[in-house]
Length: 318
Image 1 (spheres, one colour):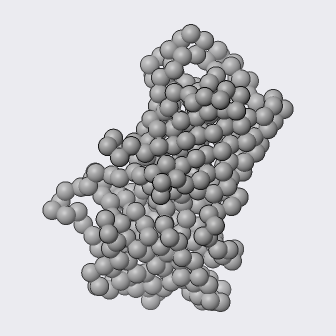
Image 2: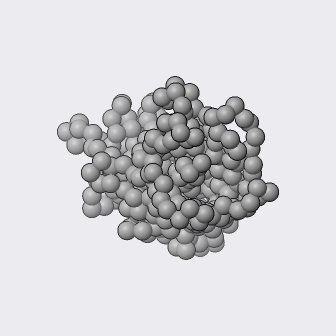
Image 3: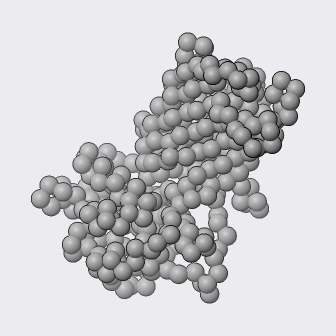
């Protein structure tokens, strides 16, 4: 049972992000896609989370008996995001679980290793290794269970601004079939200390805008930006909302989840500026591309409704 929780992660991102707009402004240099840099893949997870955990009691035996736990998970950034430390504490009728996970980024392979230990064992288990692709993290290793060799898969999915899902599965047939044995669902309790409290209606608008970008939902993006919206990109050209959104719906476009570093959130009554430094990644026409940019959105409340009126995008040192 040692591998249970060995891949236990937690998740989310902060601040509204730019999707179709940036892709219009910046195309790949000489048509060559850049290899993805994943060293900030877990930055969105920093903070405190409420955790609901379901644990299968006897994996790969045909049993469907589960036990449930409630508790918290705290994630702390190390080495400017190239590593992080996860502390899990949950309790339930079956007892208490205290877990510690050290995640380390390998800049050569561009993959992460997830290294788990429990307070009952005091040693690290075999790490699971993998990466994020289009917002979904998959990590694998090989272990033994009751003397049999098995494969272990850990998946991080359904990541939103305030929630995420973590599922560990075992396979004893070489990966043909998988049986889940560890399912954790997290809801954010506390964001990093740099965040400020936004009024509920603006916080919801920001959340909707985030989700619309990740879904490339052009009708929703149109709803969330004002009629006089302008975008100023790094080449100092100005595009109005209708041109950008109507002409560049970008079929097949997919943005990666990412975090905004050095976040800025300021309020002045019915106006707000939200933004920061972003490591932006997206896939278009089968090619993955990355940029490091500074983004600032100006939100304004008009007739009781929050909308983005202006976006400034500036290239940052790569």
